[in-house]
Length: 162
Image (cartoon, rainbow, N blue to C red):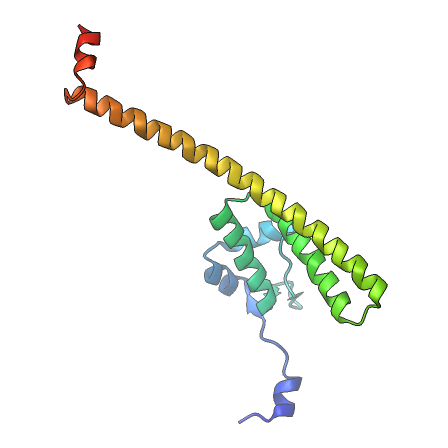
């Protein structure tokens, strides 16, 4: 059994690229590509150059996947979101780190601005999704009308076709 002092000095577990890829349901190539784009960076590299990921890296990867699947964001939009989230985390750390009252006001103003940018990005995506939903609803209505016409439920359709 480990004592408290042993667990405190123990380094956090690092994961190999294959383990991380499997957890997130992506390929190793995807992780390398995300690194190329600046979306995800491994915590460290082994002496042989192999990527090693920490738990927070895995959490970031899962966030990327969530933004792709839930909101349908492309990688450019995800980079904007992650950058904003990183900025907010830095501001939060500074705020909690004992910034003076004047700086705390500035931090809050910056956080509000970042939040508004993210809201605008999500709102734009929502508008596009709502537009697509309306188009699909219009299509469904047209298909139902055509089906009724073909079934002879709409007597006006027969006259118009004669």
